[in-house]
Image (cartoon, rainbow, N blue to C red):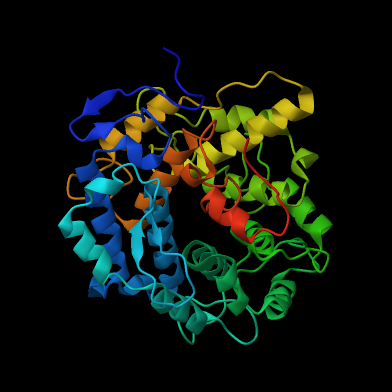
Length: 401
């Protein structure tokens, strides 16, 4: 019998792991109920008081919240709808094991911070001069501004964005953009900070989530700066002349896509470079030529190859095809990067962490982007669940097919 459009068959690889879903294509359907719950409990631990070993992340606290709530949302756990502030994390109606949630997990969800606690924390990180710092009373930083705004969208939806001072955010971004010299058009990540490709993307992504026009910025200068960062290999470095790198390449092309300037760079060379980042033996992606595979590149390189191939096909009328080998990527993440006790890691032999858990799950969601409902996939340009982004968008702009 024929399957529903967008559905795929099950292939059991190891105990507790499935390479795909028999019904709707959700990330959680890759795992057994027990394995999903282990990953959820691991992520919930990131919302508690962390040990002294996490002191180095004190300036990244909005990132910790974003990594956790985004990973949870991809697995089907989100805050209840409502505006009382007391809403709890609960399984979504489409969570495949909705009727089988264990008491252990229900108890852990009950103890997790409620919506108001998350929103209040993020509000305490916002500075009157615009942007969000890495914690209360910390300097505004473009990276933590993105993390905070993305977390607001995931946790609270459109209503939560009312806390953002949009005028001050625009002024912060305007001040951070370099207006002259060799780095003209790029952004510093904070006042007196470094300049690299991340800030270009993060600023444009925040503008998209907040519905801000970019006419207050030197967009053409930014595009020219990005164009100069494309290396002889085809990918992009953090600065002109640097080695092509997966994270920077994603940031470069996503920034161009967010301002409609994708064809300002060599698409064919970029597509050739990123396509060769998926390794034939491991199945995962590496970030640079001759480097080891890392699970976080499941998203950075996986989404990049999707964006570039879609653009290339539209520009040159090429036949659409699978952008990367999705089964091989699933094998790498599911067989090599998850732990029985929960959490995902960059590669075997290392410990799990919230960053790699978030981006491994984001990469898995790319495997189901064709035919899957919005609840089951991440937006390629902002990396938040597509349905949550749609709720806050003033225009129905979709970055997926």
